[in-house]
Length: 189
Image 1: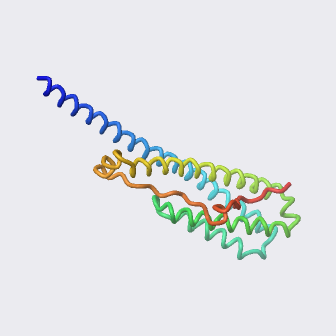
Image 2: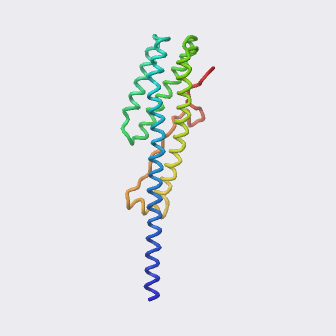
Image 3: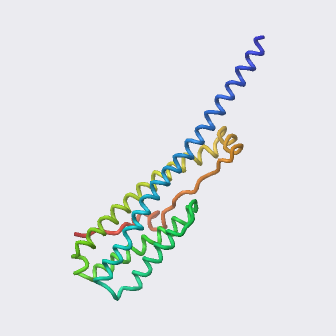
C-alpha cells in the first residue's frame, strides 16, 4: 500500500510540475504578444504622423520631393510587412528612422520650416513616439528573452517541444543603434 501511495504521489508531483512548466510557457508567450501590441500601437502612431509631416514640409520645401517620396515609400513598405515577420518589420522601421533623420537634417536649411509651429509640433510628437517605440522594444525584447530561456532550458524545453512552443524573434536595432548611436529625430528649439 505504501509503494502504491508513493507512486501515486510521484505521478501527482510530476503532473503538477508539468502543469507549472506549461503554464509558464503560455504566460511567457502571452507577454511577448502583449509587448508586441505595445510596439504595434506606437508604430501605427508614427505611421499616422508621417503624412502630416510630409504635407507640412511640402509647403515649405517643395523641391525636396525625393526625400518626401522616400519617406512615403518607407512608410508604405513598413505598413505592408505581414504580421509576425519581426525581422522584416525591424528593417522597415529602421528605414523610416533613417529617412526621418534625413528629413529633419534638411529642415535645418529652411528657417521658415523650422519656425513653423506645425512642423515643430510634429517633430516633438515624432520624437516622443520614437522614445515610446524604443521603450516598447526593450519590453518586448525582455519578454522574448524570458520566453526563449524557457523554450531552451531544462526541464521546460521538454514541455515546450511537446506543445510546439518555439523561440521568438527579437525586434533588433539597426547597426547604428547597437553601437550606441540613437536614431531618434532631434528636436531643436
